[in-house]
Length: 410
Image 1: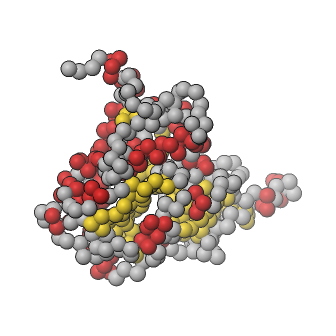
Image 2: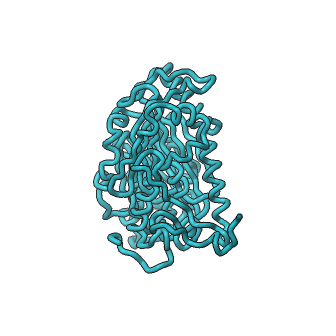
Image 3: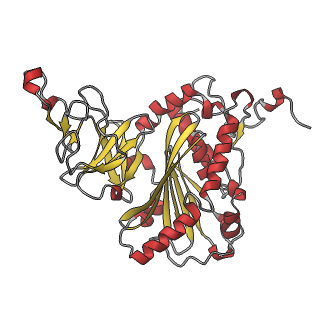
């Protein structure tokens, strides 16, 4: 017998933390607060250094806190990040997603970022180097030295990824990771290179994508995962390891790719992982390192609203790969994780379905995070641990976000 509406939307008879009020996925006010309290104070990955291979190369980045950034390699081979805003009239400086300022642009000369609106120009280190007709219009009241670009903190670390933080007073990156990346240090030791990039925009909250990446109960969704992993020795022994800061690791296992009809055994490994082994580390609030030897996949989330998220997917190999090895990594990566692979589209479908269903705020049920299996692979500790950090950052209970504000210790 089905439940009536009152029964359907009532709180589960479980401890707080074992269920989630769906409002944390859909409320615009909560989302705005997340941008300020979480994304504006946290280290996030903007790109990889291999995507800026030459001096004066740039990428633009839509920061999850709602900021537009320029990531650029300067003449000293250093990678910088700036707000993509001209200090003159607040116009975008760069409109293209990626490119180089080495050559001249329609609005300015080479080796400079030139605003197309009034041709104010800046070098790759952020200094203002030209204001057209400055003396005629501003006399000595406006000086280029006072109008440099707004610099954003950058660290290039842990495999050559470009990390940025809007908070000038935040701890250094290492101090925020709680040792979560130590477990895969060997997999990040050699220089990496991005060989595949695509993005998806789906109707769903950024935390839903985290949830999908941080629990393996949904392996029932993936026929490929059931055959190559779930039915193989070692699957049920995989454990969750929780780290300070809301981060988590799932211990690795050996996959059997040739159990899937039409697939061959993987013979190419990855530093720190034998061929066919699978490891995962998930970082708060929206980064996943997912390695299935022979390739690495990195997911980064950029929330566009409470119920819309842009997810960037990068496939990586080793910079030292021969053409033959690189071709094998690309083939194996795209077979599983490409836009038409055997795994990733199913995850996107599941998260989209959750986003569409829970956006019906009048009849959205409480969401369960209640599986406890001794921290083994189908335990939902990854989601609970993540939301414990969310609670600390937000001062709200995920089970009762509109109740009294909470302290981190509660």
